[in-house]
Length: 429
Image (cartoon, rainbow, N blue to C red; front, top):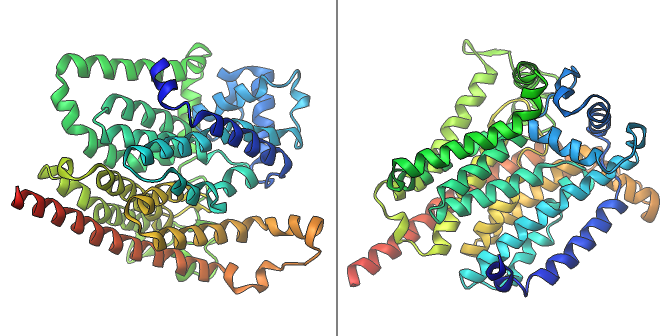
Protein backbone atom coordinates (compact mmCIF):
# COMPACT_ATOMS: atom_id res chain seq x y z
CA UNK A 1 0.00 0.00 0.00
CA UNK A 2 2.84 2.39 0.86
CA UNK A 3 4.53 1.74 -2.48
CA UNK A 4 1.26 2.42 -4.33
CA UNK A 5 0.80 5.72 -2.50
CA UNK A 6 4.39 6.69 -3.24
CA UNK A 7 3.98 5.98 -6.97
CA UNK A 8 0.73 7.94 -7.17
CA UNK A 9 1.56 10.72 -4.73
CA UNK A 10 1.79 13.35 -7.45
CA UNK A 11 -1.71 12.51 -8.68
CA UNK A 12 -3.46 12.28 -5.31
CA UNK A 13 -3.74 16.07 -4.64
CA UNK A 14 -5.22 16.58 -8.10
CA UNK A 15 -7.61 13.70 -7.53
CA UNK A 16 -8.76 15.24 -4.25
CA UNK A 17 -9.27 18.63 -5.87
CA UNK A 18 -11.25 17.13 -8.74
CA UNK A 19 -13.40 15.15 -6.31
CA UNK A 20 -14.24 18.31 -4.37
CA UNK A 21 -15.01 20.31 -7.52
CA UNK A 22 -17.21 17.69 -9.16
CA UNK A 23 -18.98 16.88 -5.88
CA UNK A 24 -19.87 20.57 -5.56
CA UNK A 25 -21.09 20.67 -9.16
CA UNK A 26 -23.13 17.49 -8.60
CA UNK A 27 -24.96 19.05 -5.65
CA UNK A 28 -25.48 22.34 -7.45
CA UNK A 29 -27.04 20.79 -10.56
CA UNK A 30 -30.53 19.30 -10.29
CA UNK A 31 -30.99 15.72 -11.38
CA UNK A 32 -33.24 14.72 -14.24
CA UNK A 33 -36.18 13.54 -12.24
CA UNK A 34 -36.17 10.27 -14.19
CA UNK A 35 -35.90 7.38 -11.71
CA UNK A 36 -35.99 9.88 -8.84
CA UNK A 37 -39.25 8.34 -7.67
CA UNK A 38 -37.69 4.87 -7.62
CA UNK A 39 -34.50 5.96 -5.83
CA UNK A 40 -36.58 7.66 -3.13
CA UNK A 41 -39.15 4.90 -2.61
CA UNK A 42 -36.61 2.07 -2.71
CA UNK A 43 -34.30 3.80 -0.24
CA UNK A 44 -37.22 4.42 2.11
CA UNK A 45 -38.34 0.82 1.78
CA UNK A 46 -34.85 -0.42 2.68
CA UNK A 47 -34.70 1.88 5.70
CA UNK A 48 -38.12 0.68 6.87
CA UNK A 49 -37.98 -3.05 6.11
CA UNK A 50 -34.30 -3.86 5.71
CA UNK A 51 -32.11 -4.55 2.69
CA UNK A 52 -33.05 -8.23 2.60
CA UNK A 53 -36.73 -7.48 2.02
CA UNK A 54 -36.45 -4.79 -0.64
CA UNK A 55 -37.45 -7.10 -3.51
CA UNK A 56 -40.81 -7.60 -1.81
CA UNK A 57 -41.61 -4.14 -3.19
CA UNK A 58 -43.18 -5.08 -6.56
CA UNK A 59 -41.59 -2.07 -8.28
CA UNK A 60 -37.96 -3.03 -7.51
CA UNK A 61 -36.29 -4.26 -10.70
CA UNK A 62 -32.60 -3.39 -10.29
CA UNK A 63 -29.68 -5.67 -9.43
CA UNK A 64 -28.52 -6.43 -5.86
CA UNK A 65 -25.58 -4.01 -5.76
CA UNK A 66 -27.92 -1.14 -6.65
CA UNK A 67 -29.87 -2.05 -3.53
CA UNK A 68 -26.64 -2.14 -1.54
CA UNK A 69 -25.83 1.32 -2.89
CA UNK A 70 -29.23 2.65 -1.79
CA UNK A 71 -28.79 0.99 1.61
CA UNK A 72 -25.47 2.80 1.97
CA UNK A 73 -27.13 6.02 0.84
CA UNK A 74 -29.85 5.54 3.46
CA UNK A 75 -27.21 5.54 6.19
CA UNK A 76 -26.77 9.27 5.55
CA UNK A 77 -30.26 9.97 6.91
CA UNK A 78 -31.91 9.63 10.30
CA UNK A 79 -35.36 8.66 9.07
CA UNK A 80 -36.98 7.44 5.83
CA UNK A 81 -38.91 10.70 5.56
CA UNK A 82 -35.58 12.54 5.23
CA UNK A 83 -35.08 10.90 1.83
CA UNK A 84 -36.97 13.28 -0.45
CA UNK A 85 -36.99 14.41 -4.06
CA UNK A 86 -34.58 17.12 -2.98
CA UNK A 87 -32.12 15.11 -0.90
CA UNK A 88 -31.95 12.26 -3.42
CA UNK A 89 -29.65 14.52 -5.41
CA UNK A 90 -26.91 13.58 -2.94
CA UNK A 91 -26.84 10.09 -4.41
CA UNK A 92 -24.52 11.55 -7.03
CA UNK A 93 -21.85 11.83 -4.34
CA UNK A 94 -21.59 8.03 -4.31
CA UNK A 95 -21.17 7.89 -8.08
CA UNK A 96 -18.78 10.77 -8.83
CA UNK A 97 -15.82 9.03 -7.09
CA UNK A 98 -16.15 6.10 -9.53
CA UNK A 99 -16.11 8.46 -12.52
CA UNK A 100 -12.96 10.08 -11.18
CA UNK A 101 -11.44 6.72 -10.26
CA UNK A 102 -11.84 5.63 -13.88
CA UNK A 103 -10.10 8.81 -15.02
CA UNK A 104 -7.39 8.38 -12.37
CA UNK A 105 -6.86 4.85 -13.66
CA UNK A 106 -6.67 6.21 -17.20
CA UNK A 107 -4.06 8.75 -16.10
CA UNK A 108 -1.90 5.99 -14.65
CA UNK A 109 -2.07 4.04 -17.92
CA UNK A 110 -1.14 7.16 -19.89
CA UNK A 111 1.96 7.65 -17.77
CA UNK A 112 3.00 4.01 -18.15
CA UNK A 113 2.65 4.09 -21.93
CA UNK A 114 4.58 7.33 -22.31
CA UNK A 115 1.53 9.43 -23.15
CA UNK A 116 1.05 12.86 -21.64
CA UNK A 117 -1.33 12.76 -18.71
CA UNK A 118 -2.90 15.95 -20.07
CA UNK A 119 -4.43 13.91 -22.89
CA UNK A 120 -6.84 12.65 -20.25
CA UNK A 121 -8.51 16.05 -20.45
CA UNK A 122 -10.35 14.96 -23.59
CA UNK A 123 -12.40 12.69 -21.33
CA UNK A 124 -12.32 14.78 -18.15
CA UNK A 125 -13.69 17.84 -19.97
CA UNK A 126 -16.13 15.92 -22.16
CA UNK A 127 -19.72 16.87 -21.21
CA UNK A 128 -20.96 13.58 -22.72
CA UNK A 129 -18.93 11.70 -20.08
CA UNK A 130 -20.42 13.67 -17.17
CA UNK A 131 -24.00 14.13 -18.32
CA UNK A 132 -25.19 10.74 -17.05
CA UNK A 133 -23.93 11.33 -13.49
CA UNK A 134 -24.07 15.07 -12.88
CA UNK A 135 -27.26 15.93 -14.77
CA UNK A 136 -29.16 12.70 -15.26
CA UNK A 137 -28.41 11.49 -11.72
CA UNK A 138 -27.75 7.92 -12.89
CA UNK A 139 -25.20 5.33 -11.73
CA UNK A 140 -23.85 3.96 -15.02
CA UNK A 141 -20.47 5.48 -14.20
CA UNK A 142 -19.95 2.86 -11.49
CA UNK A 143 -20.18 -0.22 -13.66
CA UNK A 144 -18.26 1.57 -16.43
CA UNK A 145 -15.39 2.08 -13.98
CA UNK A 146 -15.54 -1.56 -12.89
CA UNK A 147 -15.42 -2.85 -16.47
CA UNK A 148 -12.55 -0.47 -17.29
CA UNK A 149 -10.51 -1.90 -14.39
CA UNK A 150 -11.46 -5.41 -15.52
CA UNK A 151 -10.22 -4.72 -19.06
CA UNK A 152 -6.87 -3.41 -17.87
CA UNK A 153 -6.51 -6.29 -15.41
CA UNK A 154 -7.20 -8.81 -18.19
CA UNK A 155 -4.56 -7.15 -20.39
CA UNK A 156 -2.03 -7.62 -17.58
CA UNK A 157 -2.98 -11.28 -17.13
CA UNK A 158 -4.69 -10.62 -13.79
CA UNK A 159 -7.69 -12.80 -14.57
CA UNK A 160 -8.67 -12.98 -10.90
CA UNK A 161 -9.07 -9.21 -10.62
CA UNK A 162 -10.71 -9.05 -14.06
CA UNK A 163 -13.43 -11.49 -13.05
CA UNK A 164 -13.90 -9.90 -9.63
CA UNK A 165 -14.59 -6.51 -11.25
CA UNK A 166 -16.84 -8.15 -13.85
CA UNK A 167 -18.76 -9.91 -11.08
CA UNK A 168 -19.32 -6.60 -9.30
CA UNK A 169 -20.37 -4.93 -12.57
CA UNK A 170 -22.97 -7.59 -13.41
CA UNK A 171 -24.36 -7.46 -9.89
CA UNK A 172 -24.80 -3.72 -10.39
CA UNK A 173 -26.05 -3.57 -13.99
CA UNK A 174 -27.28 -6.59 -15.91
CA UNK A 175 -26.17 -5.09 -19.23
CA UNK A 176 -22.56 -5.62 -18.14
CA UNK A 177 -22.95 -9.19 -19.41
CA UNK A 178 -22.31 -7.89 -22.94
CA UNK A 179 -18.61 -7.71 -22.02
CA UNK A 180 -18.42 -11.41 -21.04
CA UNK A 181 -17.12 -12.53 -24.48
CA UNK A 182 -14.18 -10.11 -24.15
CA UNK A 183 -13.47 -11.27 -20.60
CA UNK A 184 -13.57 -14.92 -21.63
CA UNK A 185 -11.23 -14.35 -24.58
CA UNK A 186 -8.77 -12.32 -22.51
CA UNK A 187 -8.65 -14.58 -19.46
CA UNK A 188 -8.93 -18.07 -20.94
CA UNK A 189 -5.21 -18.58 -21.49
CA UNK A 190 -4.04 -17.04 -18.16
CA UNK A 191 -6.60 -19.23 -16.36
CA UNK A 192 -5.32 -22.37 -18.06
CA UNK A 193 -1.73 -21.48 -17.18
CA UNK A 194 -2.48 -20.74 -13.52
CA UNK A 195 -2.96 -24.35 -12.48
CA UNK A 196 -5.86 -26.22 -10.96
CA UNK A 197 -5.23 -25.18 -7.34
CA UNK A 198 -5.07 -21.50 -8.23
CA UNK A 199 -8.21 -21.74 -10.34
CA UNK A 200 -10.06 -23.55 -7.58
CA UNK A 201 -8.97 -21.00 -4.97
CA UNK A 202 -9.90 -17.97 -7.09
CA UNK A 203 -13.25 -19.29 -8.32
CA UNK A 204 -14.13 -20.31 -4.77
CA UNK A 205 -13.27 -16.79 -3.67
CA UNK A 206 -15.48 -15.30 -6.39
CA UNK A 207 -18.32 -17.59 -5.31
CA UNK A 208 -17.78 -16.35 -1.76
CA UNK A 209 -18.01 -12.74 -2.91
CA UNK A 210 -21.28 -13.52 -4.69
CA UNK A 211 -22.58 -15.17 -1.52
CA UNK A 212 -21.74 -12.04 0.48
CA UNK A 213 -23.63 -9.87 -2.02
CA UNK A 214 -26.66 -12.12 -1.68
CA UNK A 215 -26.26 -12.65 2.10
CA UNK A 216 -29.00 -10.18 3.21
CA UNK A 217 -31.48 -11.86 0.87
CA UNK A 218 -30.39 -15.37 1.87
CA UNK A 219 -30.74 -14.56 5.56
CA UNK A 220 -34.14 -12.95 4.95
CA UNK A 221 -35.35 -15.89 2.87
CA UNK A 222 -36.07 -13.69 -0.14
CA UNK A 223 -33.56 -15.00 -2.70
CA UNK A 224 -36.42 -16.52 -4.72
CA UNK A 225 -38.13 -13.12 -4.74
CA UNK A 226 -34.91 -11.48 -5.92
CA UNK A 227 -34.44 -13.96 -8.75
CA UNK A 228 -38.07 -13.66 -9.75
CA UNK A 229 -37.80 -9.87 -9.79
CA UNK A 230 -34.71 -9.95 -12.03
CA UNK A 231 -36.42 -12.28 -14.49
CA UNK A 232 -39.94 -10.85 -14.51
CA UNK A 233 -39.24 -7.15 -13.91
CA UNK A 234 -36.17 -6.57 -16.09
CA UNK A 235 -36.18 -8.76 -19.21
CA UNK A 236 -39.12 -7.69 -21.32
CA UNK A 237 -40.19 -5.08 -18.75
CA UNK A 238 -40.43 -2.44 -21.52
CA UNK A 239 -41.37 -4.54 -24.60
CA UNK A 240 -40.94 -1.76 -27.17
CA UNK A 241 -38.43 -1.11 -29.92
CA UNK A 242 -36.66 1.66 -28.02
CA UNK A 243 -36.92 3.51 -24.72
CA UNK A 244 -35.55 6.79 -26.11
CA UNK A 245 -32.31 5.24 -27.39
CA UNK A 246 -31.94 6.91 -30.79
CA UNK A 247 -30.83 3.77 -32.61
CA UNK A 248 -31.64 1.96 -35.86
CA UNK A 249 -35.29 1.61 -34.89
CA UNK A 250 -35.73 5.38 -35.14
CA UNK A 251 -34.68 5.01 -38.77
CA UNK A 252 -37.11 2.13 -39.35
CA UNK A 253 -40.27 2.93 -37.34
CA UNK A 254 -42.40 6.03 -36.91
CA UNK A 255 -42.57 5.80 -33.11
CA UNK A 256 -40.24 3.13 -31.64
CA UNK A 257 -41.17 4.23 -28.11
CA UNK A 258 -44.68 2.82 -28.49
CA UNK A 259 -44.09 0.10 -31.10
CA UNK A 260 -43.95 -3.38 -29.49
CA UNK A 261 -40.81 -5.37 -30.18
CA UNK A 262 -43.00 -8.47 -30.29
CA UNK A 263 -44.16 -7.42 -33.77
CA UNK A 264 -43.19 -10.03 -36.33
CA UNK A 265 -40.91 -9.55 -39.35
CA UNK A 266 -40.39 -12.53 -41.70
CA UNK A 267 -42.00 -14.77 -39.12
CA UNK A 268 -39.62 -13.75 -36.31
CA UNK A 269 -40.28 -11.16 -33.52
CA UNK A 270 -38.28 -7.98 -33.96
CA UNK A 271 -36.83 -8.53 -30.47
CA UNK A 272 -34.99 -11.61 -31.74
CA UNK A 273 -33.92 -9.85 -34.92
CA UNK A 274 -32.37 -7.19 -32.70
CA UNK A 275 -30.50 -9.73 -30.59
CA UNK A 276 -29.29 -11.46 -33.76
CA UNK A 277 -27.98 -8.19 -35.20
CA UNK A 278 -26.25 -7.43 -31.92
CA UNK A 279 -24.64 -10.90 -31.85
CA UNK A 280 -23.39 -10.54 -35.44
CA UNK A 281 -22.07 -7.02 -34.81
CA UNK A 282 -20.34 -8.16 -31.62
CA UNK A 283 -18.71 -11.06 -33.48
CA UNK A 284 -17.44 -8.68 -36.16
CA UNK A 285 -15.89 -6.17 -33.75
CA UNK A 286 -14.44 -8.92 -31.55
CA UNK A 287 -12.82 -10.76 -34.46
CA UNK A 288 -9.52 -8.77 -34.44
CA UNK A 289 -9.08 -9.45 -30.74
CA UNK A 290 -9.93 -13.13 -31.19
CA UNK A 291 -7.49 -13.58 -34.07
CA UNK A 292 -4.71 -11.76 -32.23
CA UNK A 293 -5.18 -13.95 -29.17
CA UNK A 294 -5.63 -17.14 -31.18
CA UNK A 295 -2.32 -16.79 -33.05
CA UNK A 296 -0.64 -15.22 -29.98
CA UNK A 297 0.14 -11.98 -31.77
CA UNK A 298 -1.60 -9.95 -29.06
CA UNK A 299 1.34 -10.15 -26.64
CA UNK A 300 3.71 -9.01 -29.40
CA UNK A 301 1.88 -5.71 -29.69
CA UNK A 302 3.14 -2.72 -27.74
CA UNK A 303 1.16 -2.05 -24.59
CA UNK A 304 -0.62 1.01 -25.97
CA UNK A 305 -1.64 -1.09 -28.97
CA UNK A 306 -2.99 -3.84 -26.75
CA UNK A 307 -4.98 -1.34 -24.69
CA UNK A 308 -6.29 0.37 -27.82
CA UNK A 309 -7.43 -2.97 -29.28
CA UNK A 310 -9.07 -4.04 -26.05
CA UNK A 311 -10.88 -0.79 -25.27
CA UNK A 312 -12.13 -0.20 -28.80
CA UNK A 313 -13.50 -3.74 -28.90
CA UNK A 314 -15.39 -2.96 -25.69
CA UNK A 315 -16.51 0.45 -27.01
CA UNK A 316 -17.92 -0.99 -30.22
CA UNK A 317 -19.58 -3.84 -28.30
CA UNK A 318 -21.34 -1.29 -26.08
CA UNK A 319 -22.38 0.78 -29.10
CA UNK A 320 -23.68 -2.30 -30.95
CA UNK A 321 -25.77 -3.23 -27.92
CA UNK A 322 -27.28 0.27 -27.93
CA UNK A 323 -27.93 0.38 -31.68
CA UNK A 324 -29.34 -3.06 -32.45
CA UNK A 325 -31.03 -4.46 -29.33
CA UNK A 326 -34.61 -3.47 -28.60
CA UNK A 327 -35.83 -1.94 -25.29
CA UNK A 328 -32.70 0.22 -25.04
CA UNK A 329 -32.64 3.35 -22.88
CA UNK A 330 -30.87 6.53 -23.95
CA UNK A 331 -27.95 6.12 -21.53
CA UNK A 332 -27.10 2.48 -22.28
CA UNK A 333 -24.09 3.40 -24.42
CA UNK A 334 -22.44 5.28 -21.56
CA UNK A 335 -19.35 2.98 -21.38
CA UNK A 336 -18.66 3.74 -25.05
CA UNK A 337 -17.53 7.27 -24.18
CA UNK A 338 -14.76 6.29 -21.77
CA UNK A 339 -13.63 3.27 -23.80
CA UNK A 340 -13.51 5.11 -27.13
CA UNK A 341 -11.68 7.93 -25.33
CA UNK A 342 -8.93 5.50 -24.32
CA UNK A 343 -8.73 4.27 -27.92
CA UNK A 344 -8.49 7.85 -29.21
CA UNK A 345 -5.66 8.69 -26.83
CA UNK A 346 -3.70 5.53 -27.59
CA UNK A 347 -4.05 5.77 -31.39
CA UNK A 348 -4.51 9.52 -32.00
CA UNK A 349 -7.70 8.65 -33.89
CA UNK A 350 -9.74 11.55 -32.56
CA UNK A 351 -12.70 11.86 -34.90
CA UNK A 352 -14.56 8.62 -33.97
CA UNK A 353 -14.42 9.67 -30.32
CA UNK A 354 -15.60 13.19 -31.13
CA UNK A 355 -18.47 11.92 -33.26
CA UNK A 356 -19.67 9.37 -30.72
CA UNK A 357 -19.52 11.98 -27.94
CA UNK A 358 -21.64 14.39 -29.97
CA UNK A 359 -24.20 11.71 -30.81
CA UNK A 360 -24.52 10.52 -27.21
CA UNK A 361 -24.78 14.07 -25.87
CA UNK A 362 -27.50 14.97 -28.37
CA UNK A 363 -29.44 11.83 -27.47
CA UNK A 364 -29.31 12.57 -23.73
CA UNK A 365 -30.17 16.23 -24.14
CA UNK A 366 -32.90 15.43 -26.65
CA UNK A 367 -34.62 13.38 -23.94
CA UNK A 368 -33.63 15.31 -20.81
CA UNK A 369 -34.00 18.94 -22.05
CA UNK A 370 -31.47 20.19 -19.51
CA UNK A 371 -31.08 23.38 -21.53
CA UNK A 372 -34.56 24.35 -20.36
CA UNK A 373 -33.19 24.58 -16.81
CA UNK A 374 -30.26 26.70 -18.04
CA UNK A 375 -32.54 28.93 -20.09
CA UNK A 376 -34.94 29.68 -17.24
CA UNK A 377 -32.18 30.59 -14.77
CA UNK A 378 -29.45 32.17 -16.85
CA UNK A 379 -29.95 32.92 -20.54
CA UNK A 380 -33.63 33.68 -20.89
CA UNK A 381 -33.50 32.00 -24.30
CA UNK A 382 -36.29 29.55 -24.96
CA UNK A 383 -34.72 26.51 -26.62
CA UNK A 384 -37.40 24.36 -28.23
CA UNK A 385 -35.67 21.04 -28.81
CA UNK A 386 -38.38 19.77 -31.13
CA UNK A 387 -37.67 22.64 -33.55
CA UNK A 388 -33.92 22.03 -33.73
CA UNK A 389 -32.75 19.56 -36.35
CA UNK A 390 -29.71 18.46 -34.32
CA UNK A 391 -31.99 16.97 -31.65
CA UNK A 392 -34.27 15.16 -34.07
CA UNK A 393 -34.19 11.44 -33.20
CA UNK A 394 -33.62 10.35 -36.80
CA UNK A 395 -30.70 12.74 -37.19
CA UNK A 396 -29.08 11.56 -33.97
CA UNK A 397 -29.75 7.92 -34.89
CA UNK A 398 -28.05 8.46 -38.25
CA UNK A 399 -25.03 10.00 -36.49
CA UNK A 400 -24.73 7.08 -34.08
CA UNK A 401 -25.10 4.48 -36.84
CA UNK A 402 -22.41 6.31 -38.79
CA UNK A 403 -20.27 6.24 -35.65
CA UNK A 404 -20.47 2.46 -35.49
CA UNK A 405 -19.61 1.96 -39.15
CA UNK A 406 -16.80 4.51 -39.12
CA UNK A 407 -15.50 3.37 -35.74
CA UNK A 408 -15.42 -0.28 -36.79
CA UNK A 409 -13.72 0.59 -40.07
CA UNK A 410 -11.12 2.73 -38.32
CA UNK A 411 -10.55 -0.01 -35.76
CA UNK A 412 -9.89 -2.65 -38.42
CA UNK A 413 -7.47 -0.38 -40.29
CA UNK A 414 -5.62 0.58 -37.11
CA UNK A 415 -5.45 -3.01 -35.90
CA UNK A 416 -3.99 -4.16 -39.22
CA UNK A 417 -1.38 -1.42 -38.88
CA UNK A 418 -0.52 -2.82 -35.45
CA UNK A 419 -0.16 -6.31 -36.95
CA UNK A 420 1.99 -5.04 -39.83
CA UNK A 421 4.29 -3.29 -37.38
CA UNK A 422 4.72 -6.54 -35.46
CA UNK A 423 5.46 -8.50 -38.65
CA UNK A 424 8.01 -5.90 -39.75
CA UNK A 425 9.78 -5.96 -36.40
CA UNK A 426 9.90 -9.79 -36.37
CA UNK A 427 11.23 -9.83 -39.93
CA UNK A 428 14.12 -7.45 -39.14
CA UNK A 429 15.25 -9.14 -35.91
